[in-house]
Every structure is written in C-alpha cells, then in structure tokens.
Image 1: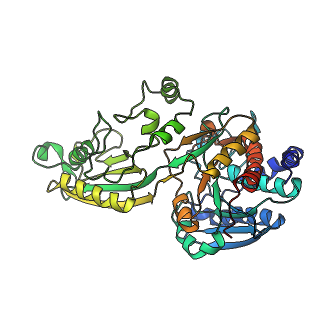
Image 2: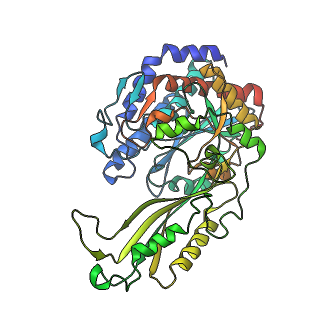
Image 3: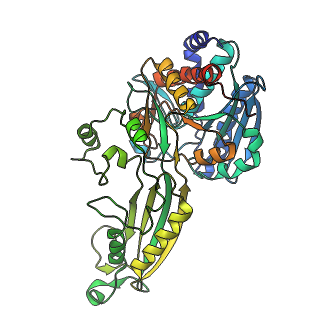
Length: 464
C-alpha cells in the first residue's frame, strides 16, 4: 500500500468526506427512544451501504434491542486481519434549550462540526471508514484483511451486542481489533488509551413507615428513610482516604505496575489548571495515588443521585416513607461485577439492618480492560498516530467504560487497541457536541496508517 497516496486521497476528497459525515449526523439515531427506532436502523443502513460500495460483504445481526452490522473484505488468507468497532446510535439531546443550534442539523463553525454524535461515535468510526477507503482507492489496495463490527445499542443497552458475539466467533476472528471511541488529552498529544475501568451500577431504595408521616407528630420516634440512607452513604467510602469501605471490595484488585504508572504519567497534566477548568478549588485523590491515577487506574464508588421526601416548592413537614440513591462503582483489573454486586448488597443490608426495608436494582455492569504498553499492536497505534498527526503520540488511561471491549476480547481472543481521535472539549453526551474537522481527517489518516503498520511492521499471523 502506498501510504503517501492514501493521504493524498484524503486531502483531495476532504469536502466529500466531511459532506458524508454531515449527512450521517442528520439521522437522529437515539437508541434510548423507541420513537427513533427507524432512525437507528437508518443510521446502520448508512454504514452498510457505504461499506458495500467499498466492496465489503455485509450482514445485519439482530440484537434484543436493535441490531449490529458485520462487514468484511478479505484480500488474502496469508495477511493479518484487523477488526474495527464503532456504534451509530447517539445519546438523547436533553436539555434541548442549551443547544446553540439544532442537534441534528449539523453546522460547521470554528473548524468543528457541531451535532449530536459528531464525536461519539459517528465521527470517530466514520474516520476509520474513510481511512479504509483511502487505503483501498488511494493506496492501491488494503494491505490487510479488514472487518467491521458496528452496533446500534451502545448508548441504550451496552450488553445487547455483547450477547450476540459468542454466536459469531469464527466470523469475528482477527489478529487485532481497533476501537475509536476515546480522546486525546489535548490537540498536541495524540494518544492510545491503555485501560478502561469496568462498572457496576446499583439503585438502592429504603422504605420505612407505611406512608409519609407528620414530622412534628412522629419525629424522634421513627427511623427515617432519608436518615438511614444518609447513614448508608456515609459508610460506603472514607472521605479522607478515598477508600471504599465495602468489605472485600479490594480483594481482587491488581495494583498498576510501575511501567503502567509511568506510561500514563506521560499525559500532560497540570492539577491546578485541571481543577480551575472544572470550577473547583482542588482535586481529590485516593491516599497513595495521584489524582490522575485515582481517576483512571483505581476503583471508586460514587453516589450519582439521591431522591426522597418532599422536594417541591414551598415546605412540607413530613417524614418521607421512601428514599433512594443511585450508586456506581468503577472497577479495575481483576475485579468483576458478579462478585462486587453481592458484596455491596450484603454490606448495605447489614448497615440498614432493622431500621427499614432495603431493595436493590442492578443497572449497567461491565468488565475492566487493560493493554500491555509493550504490545506491538499498541506500539503500531502510537506510530500510526504520529505519522497521521505529525506529533509524538502518548499512552493514557481512561476512567470510563466501553462496554463492548471486554466481550470482544473474549469473543476474538485478540488484543484491542483503543485509538480514538476526540478532544476533551467535544461535549460528549452534552449539549453542543462537536468534533474538530482536523481530528476527523487526521483520524482517517491514522486509520490508513494503522493498517499499513500492521501489514509491514507487526507481522502478525492471520487468524481469519
């Protein structure tokens, strides 16, 4: 493959490639809203037609929620195979009044394209498709076999596509799979993400008396659900050290080794500036770890929301009979949600005891993921990013979760390289989401360069 010609192809077709992304972003593919199911299907069809026009064979795999798209183009059984992941569904747009322009009427302003899904994940995975097109039509031919798995459930049911993967192990076989669903720390530092935290989300509801009670008549005689909930929350985490107090929570944690800590320390990080940008006086951190490590490499527990009692206008002197909290735990290497959930439930039940009745409702769960900084596929990603963006690439860790990554590792047995192209200011999941056009086109160059790196420098044996 002639990489210079592939890059030239992207340059010559900039206007069309941006135009294709613009049309893609017009589709309101909100997977969480049933009234947009047809739009979700239309977005998946958009990718399907594009990949078919590039000579890919495609299949649509129904899921319990929506569907996924599988596509493949085989050049030679003797070549390595790269699998590329993306998702076409987007987050809801609320609060709509905070958008400066309609979320599904893309506009180009200040060197960026503004629309829901511009970064997460239409822009990022379409950059991969554009890079494949450039390798094929500009570079002469794909230098490796390429497959795509593109889902439409990620923002609604992160486990729907994962449940289908074991059925398709042979078709998904690859030497490496690439996920572009992450960010650079800033525009001067392209980055490969080394790790993701897992998650276990739970809602707890504490019920007390049979109904709301007058606080003057019964105050002082009842265990009040809000007070019991406060007691529970107070005992979930040590405020000073940052340690989670659930017994057994750390039993399986594999602490980050010196090599990983050194790798993520490459990230440009000014703690004072970060705090200022967030509107706080200083950052918190777990005892024995930096704030950056605490937010990426260490397990945590957060209370995401609390509800109970009277919260309307004016004042109502009642003891509410119910109080609830939404709690999420971010997990790290070797922790599994299936073990953490019962540990959490047992501990909360012991705290509530006979002061009320507690109910549990599990929400999202996902495994953590981490890569070896020395992996040849990670190193190939660093080289591809530097070639594409003209700046040295670094490695970093991400505090969030990408639900599909661990199941794809399990289904394929292949390593994952997380090579995203976004920036922290892209407003993912928020009003005024945007994606720099330079990052979109640079991402296309990086996608083409990565295929070239795997073909010429990694030398992996083909898996299918």
